[in-house]
Image 1 (cartoon, rainbow, N blue to C red):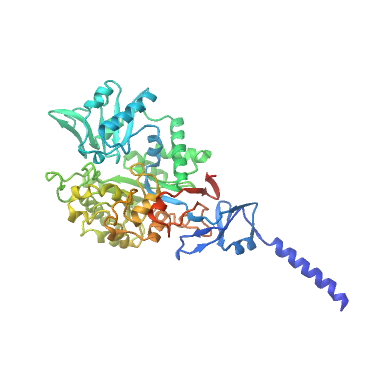
Image 2 (image 1 turned 90 degrees about the vertical axis):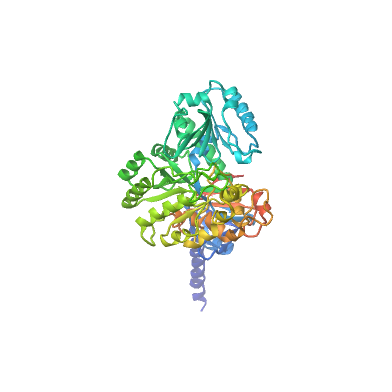
Length: 546
């Protein structure tokens, strides 16, 4: 009897040692958090194990500590964790370059815009003077500017100032002369605005590029600095992936190079702009997919913007009865590129604002998609939709990619443009979501603010950052909190064919996550708008935070 005790004791010790050593190795353990995994059940967890940049498990603090060991741990101190936010429609590259130019956003008059420009010019004395962000709808008279005062300030230095939505700009006479733009200049899908036979400097839609194309391109060093500034701003608000809508292939190659050097950590879903050289590039090369870059789609423009009356409407503008806006290209162009994109197996993403623009695009999509499918062709903005056309999104599995802060920015004047009856079919996010059961959300920054928290509040509360209107704007189209968070994470990933690798905090996916002190599922709109990101992680590595 006594002889058997020692072998039994040794066996027990051996078993304990094996048990201690059987923990799975990880790189980082996160514990003491409230983790919104945004999985199919919208479940929560306390802890997470990460290895090689990916999640290997989520669960309770006890279960993760019991199963895993790691050299690094992160005590979340009870904070709330979300999947890294994904902006499904932005202009990351342009935003970065824009940070180097005069910022005219929020100016309350043309005179105020000129004062900011003059101050910027005194610190930036060489070359073209470029700025963006003015919006005449914020000014007392709501009238488009002309370039007389601009010419007095800058009689010889070329100046181009782009409207907040990028669909209009004002150029001084020196810039018009440099670009050889006159009152006699005509073009498809744009307007050189004239008065008494003279160009006023106002350029609408395609006319903007007549001058913008003459601005010398940024140097590689300037691009690198601009994109670094852009990613820092994104990380600070919890963005870990951005959809960059409308890039030239040379810009994508620059992004890829910076990412491979480790100088750019932001994950980017890039859409090539509608140009023959870009179709040739991707058709010949094939889709590009790395851990940080995904290129498989094209961005096409159907019409302009509502704010500059370039959106193509079925009936005239309520505040300009002789005008319906215009398509930026003939419908035959959209049909031909749809055919080519479909046959090559790529994704088509088309900007459409007006109800006529949306109808043209939906009907061309229907011609090629034919019924339900998994091509995930997108309409970017889907801003004003006829009641007769909502069902087409569901019938042909067309993805409405929307930006909720457009509603809360435009609500002050959208009724004047559209009339109250037509306005009911605008910014109809709930109605659009119901067509396929999901909807990706973005900001369109720098057209709107970069903040995903403004996106969340605009989607859920249908109020702007000032809390107006008190009861919300067209609240029948509010999204629930769960829907809004899904729209900023897993549904945005799905619109990019990336739901298998990001968008939720589940085993096998990238450990892209955000830590915050605010519970988006419970907090008030004011609390959400004032929320700060405590830390942002990409692939388990901290890219922002203390």
